[in-house]
Image 1 (tube, protein in one colour):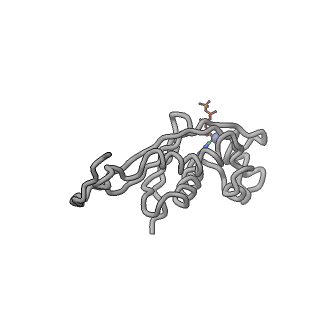
Image 2: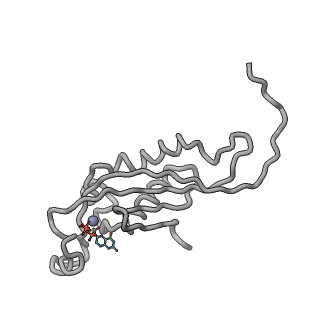
Image 3: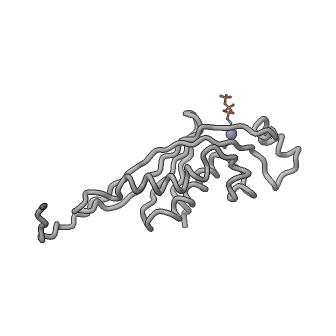
Length: 151
Ligand SMILES: Nc1nc2c(c(=O)[nH]1)N=C([C@H](O)[C@H](O)COP(=O)(O)OP(=O)(O)OP(=O)(O)O)CN2
Ligand SMILES: [Zn+2]
């Protein structure tokens, strides 16, 4: 039987960041409800094509917190993975962002807004104060970072 120590570990203030990367594939179309058809075509070009198009998105979520002196963890990576699959993979993978994600009913599904949507979904599900940053990559070339609203 393992021996349990009564000795309390001294708290040490060590704040670290911890990141988890996941990917999902989704279709979308760039189109704004606040523009005419002509304006949408002019601004978004081929990305406004009614047939839509798809991307393989990669998402890196970073949490930040104190290392628990007893467990050595900020959060168990397996728990983090589960939270993120629930908040990101389940609602987004193999979906049409504009049709399947209510957030995009009235918001253009640009990479910028995808990052904000993901940050808000993750923020709702993670223990309070843990989420630090969301980075979303569209292919290897494009990347948007969001760190939450600035007050
Ligand atoms: N600020 C933004 N501009 C654009 C976004 C965006 O999310 N934010 N998105 C698009 C398109 O959806 C698309 O991602 C454009 O990619 P693009 O490189 O033009 O197209 P391809 O995937 O076909 O890449 P190729 O290298 O040409 O095959 C446009 N602008
Ligand atoms: Zn696109």
